[in-house]
Amino acid sequence: MGPNPEGVERDSFDHRNADAGSGPSRSDLRTQRRDLLELLEIKFPGEASAEVVQLIEQQESFDLLHGWFRALARATDYAEFLAFLRR
Image 1 (spheres, rainbow, N blue to C red):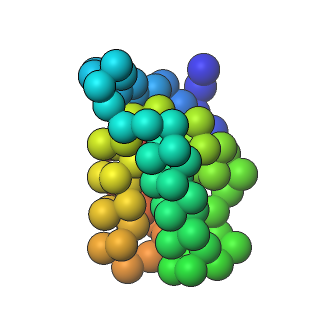
Image 2 (cartoon, one colour):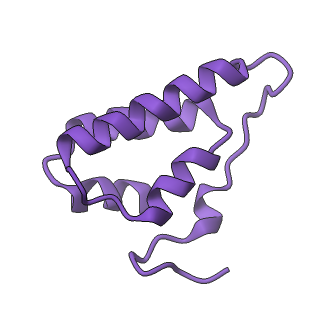
C-alpha cells in the first residue's frame, strides 16, 4: 500500500504485540486508543486526518499506542506528532 496524503506509510503502523497471549487486555487497548484520540483532539482540535484516527483505532500494540501517546503529549504541533508517526 502506498503513502497516504500525509506521507505516512500504512505498513509502518502494522506492529503487533509480541506477547499477544500475555499482553494487555482488549479493554486496555480500547482505553489506550480512546485516551490517545482524546488527547489528540484536546491538543490539536480538528487537525487529525481520518486516516490517522483509523490507524490509531486499528493498532493492536499497547506499547506502540503508549509511545504515540507520550509523543503526542510532548508534541508542540500536529506536524511534530506526524513526524513521530512516520518513524
